[in-house]
Image (cartoon, rainbow, N blue to C red):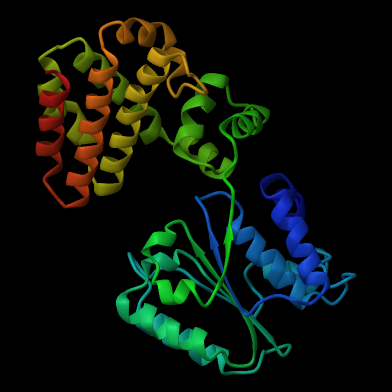
Length: 328
C-alpha cells in the first residue's frame, strides 16, 4: 500500500489539508504532530518530506515511485534526517548534531527535512537546545516533531511549532480492518482497546507472550471476582514469573483494567466494543455481583496501582495490595 493510500484511510481530512499546503508551497518551518501511536504521524511526515524532494511528481506532490520518493520512504535519503530516542530519552548530543546538520546545505538539494520521534522524551538539556534552534532556524529546512504526549513538551517549544492533532481511529473502524486481515471478532475486540495501530495489533496477535498474558489475566480476574483467596498467591506463582519488567507490568494493568471497564459498560448498558467479548456470558454473570459504586472503586484501585508502578514501587507488592483492595 502506498503511503498516500494509507493516509487516506488514517487521516483523510489532514491529508487533504496538507495536499493544499504542499501545492501552494506554504509548509511551515516546524510542525508538532501529536496523537496516539498508529495514527499516521510518521507516515505524514515522510509523505511531506517526499513532496519537498520529489522530482517527478506534479503540483508539488510526491509521485511515490521515483528514486527520491523511494529513498525517503526507505529512510535512506541523505537530506532527510530522523532522530529517535537513544535508550529512554533524546539526549542533548543528538539535538546538537541535529543543529549542526541544519547549518549545512542539503547533500542533494537545498532542502533539508528533520523528523524527531517521541520528542516528549527529550532531556531538559535537549529540549532547551531544540528551543534555541526553533527560535533561529537556519537554511531551507522543515522539522517535524512527533509526540504521543503533548503535555510533556515545553510550552515554549509548542508555541514555536504549528500544532497538528492526529485523530484516533474509531475502534469499530480498526476492528473492521483487523477482521479484513483475518482476525476473529474476539481477537480484534481486545486488541483495539490496546492500540490504535493495525501493525501493532497484528504483531500483538502473533506474540506468544501476549497470548499467554491474556489467559493469565483472565484467570486472575475470575479468581478475584469469585473472592478466591488463591488470587493473592497467584501473584507470586503465576503473575510475576510472566510479567517480568516495567513494560509487562503496564500491560498487566491495561488488561485487568479493561476487564473492569467491560463490567461497567455492561452494568450501564453502554457497550461499544467489549475488550473480552469472548467471555461476555461470564461478564454478564460477574456484573450482577457488583454495584456501580463497587465497579468504580475497583477501577480506581487499578488506576492507583498504575501510579504506584510509575513511582517505582515494588511490582509484586503493588499487585498483592491490589488483590486485597479488589476483594473487599
